[in-house]
Amino acid sequence: MRLEFDRLSILLAEDNAYMRAALVAMLEAFGAQAIHQATDGETALALFHEERPDIVLLDWEMPAPDGLAVARQMRDRESSPDPFVPILMISAHAERARVLAARDAGVNDYLVKPVTPRVLYDKLLGLAVDQRPFVAAPGYFGPQRPDPQQPDPSARRPREDDTRKTGHPGDRA
Image (cartoon, rainbow, N blue to C red; front, side, top):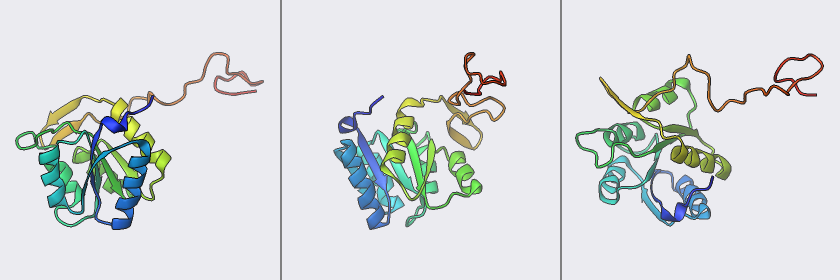
């Protein structure tokens, strides 16, 4: 599947000028033309309300409010112009607690820096393809969280003819 980036409006909120320039260059290489840039949370929220982007890329650590607070405000069903907008959180931190906090703020996906074009493209494609239903629960509005008890549907499943000398499915000759 291929995204038509030239038809998308993208909001990029990143305070680091070098990282922002790198992300813009990647998005432009993908064909994006409407890239709205913010260097702080306040500007990001203003652009979100004015431009109504199709996708939001948020840096976690930026001047007030930070990316997590911005994501929560974007998901606020009372005041947000589009609480369903896909949000990709970008951070230099990969700690489980941060990923869970972003998920709990309603972020669709999480990307750890450094960012490569291939990974960014795959994440953006995933946002377009993965149309999980949204749920409203006390203290949460956002994409339905995966059930940890259910197997990952994207994981490779062995085929019947995938056998080696052992005869176990999934083994290859």
